[in-house]
Length: 381
View 1 (cartoon, helix red, strand yellow):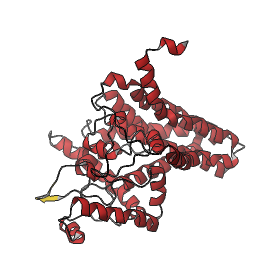
View 2 (cartoon, helix red, strand yellow; view 1 turned 180 degrees about the vertical axis):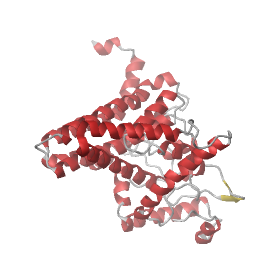
View 3 (cartoon, helix red, strand yellow; view 1 turned 90 degrees about the vertical axis):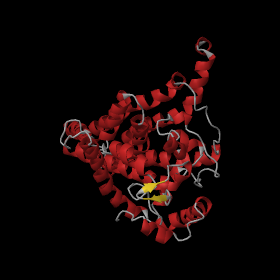
View 4 (cartoon, helix red, strand yellow; view 1 turned 45 degrees about the vertical axis):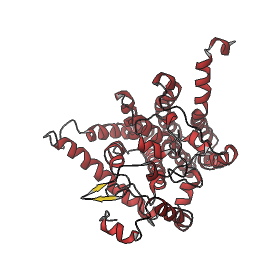
């Protein structure tokens, strides 16, 4: 009876958007693990990493493309997804801080495990949704992105991503483009330092063009710091010192999850230097892609990364898939590839031959990549 009252086209849009709402099932998993304790605290990361990897094998690839000219009103169920996640993550995070910090039945290791799982969710889902929101023209959606990033103390990611990464991806000026043969354990401390610096520098230069100092109230870093301070204070109010520690655990795990994905997305891929500090335009071939269906449900098509860089303001349901003729393909989805990235010998064995093939395919005229990279004066590591 209810379905009969819904317009067929509305029902069809809702049904097509439904798989992307699977991420919301991680919230009751978090609460279940917190209530049960014991080995159940491992449930959330196991489901997020390994179950979706298995589901990728079951459901296979999605090579279909939506019409990129689909009107905004037809995407309502998709945009609602990212907006609804913000209050849900906020209530889950701080509700768990209140419950777990005050629990007398959970030991320290169990509390750590619960908030490790919370960090996996706030990193895999929360930061990813903030990434979608920050790219939209709506000021309200950008504010929601700031709130999500403040929950993991990584607010500068918005400035770095919009002003630095998209402009300089595949060049030495982009900190988060992982260099060929650069293992994740070298990449991670480098990017933590350089991303904050490059984000602040970009905002400072943006203000300087208007003859304003970095200390001008228009600098978004003041908003970032205020929101992050509010999150820290709330964690202390709800859970005391223990609540603060738990908050920091989830934030650290979330940041690690984000940078693992950043590492995978552009590893070894470079744009051609045209001379005079200029580079060729960003093309689909400058990002790794994965068409695996289940992990793209979880990550709202983040793995269609080439099209995201080609059309940064395109909402996630409209991101296009590319064949290997246009963009390099990962052998597995991000859940598998990020685990591989933590094991550098395995990562190099899987990815270095693919990078070399990519070089031969797209830049056959460059025969000495060592000399080429030196000539471009890459950033110091």
